Length: 382
Image 1 (cartoon, one colour):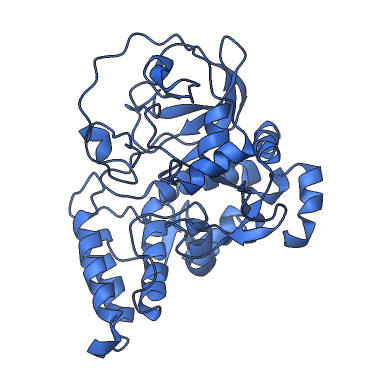
Image 2 (cartoon, rainbow, N blue to C red):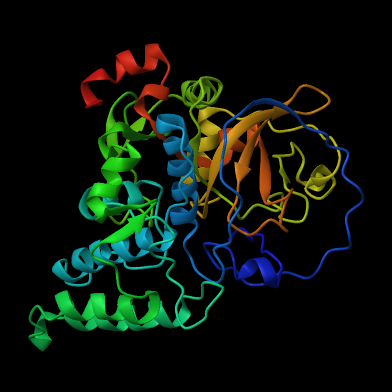
């Protein structure tokens, strides 16, 4: 089995998917990369997910914060932990009613907050931090263990568990994240979670996920078979070049996107924050700080890597812009959730070959699609 790259212990606690630790590497030389902005969208400051597998919530919350700025010109810090709580309620119901044959983990995908907003609305962080009893960092080890034990017990029909899970699961969430306010004040007005969703001007029906895999037809929706897709949500499938072209089109048109990506490659380094795909694996460390040739990625190469598990969905971030290096190569500027001390002030810069090979999917507003792609997908765009 291919050996996966492991973050140092500090970042291990922050990553969405925990890996075992590899031997420490010598300190890298000073980076040669200098980036010039091509197009950037506004985003709120970098935050930190702490010891929780919730990058999916942090990345989508950041994406929706930028969407609110685009739609109404207002900065609103959303509650990542309200998305987490809401998703757990939906995951628990799914797992229990499927009698334990579904997935129940900390992980998720960018569409999960979109789903939960449809059911439970939104809260600003000022109304729900998910931090109680003086906590300043998220740590979900005990929360998840207690939730997992609870849902497994209720998912066993032989135990005649009844429907008490409808009370017990929210009680566990209250215990570790705090109770949800029925009403709250924000900028002098009183809201519920649903009325606050309306206030933000976000419409969950406006957001779609696009991807590129050749084992299913192009230009049609399909359920991507990856572990984190517990909700069996459909993604829209495009040829690889068109997938990348639509990401670029959205960004240059003023729409940021939320990214699901393989974050376990040796070149996905929080030490430097520049993520590339070297043509020669011998350059895995050199390419972190200096220019090296990158791999030419084809649809088949991407597909093979997905099917043999060289590409897995491990981490989610918010793409806030495009930049170029001194050689005019483009990179995606990605807001991460490992704190401002990681990467380049909390951002990771992903090369186009890395995106071609390792990007699982992106979430975006449907109006961010190129016109030609929107025409081909029109029957699936509500």
